[in-house]
Image (cartoon, rainbow, N blue to C red; front, top):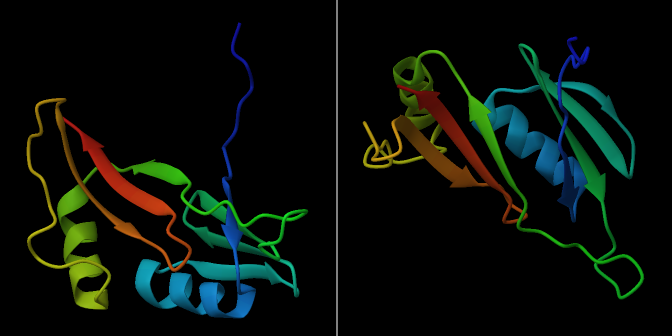
Length: 120
């Protein structure tokens, strides 16, 4: 029996929703679906990323440093796009890793790591 899973939408911590939405629009090519002072939802094709503001206090820590992997069918055109956007440099693409992927990654402004991966 299939589970019925449709998608997964990571919620990444943010210290500045407006700044981080602008960054994801410019450097990752997402479009904005919703934004208020404390939360934003961004989409690109079938992917959603949520950003949630944290005060970075003892009661509401920022906890940056999340890691997400986005799997794609063809990494080459995406890598070229991200180089053109200034998101990554031309030397960041790893072709045919020992674990049978091609991939590149970058950090957002909150030190969340985003990896784009193609299984080989």
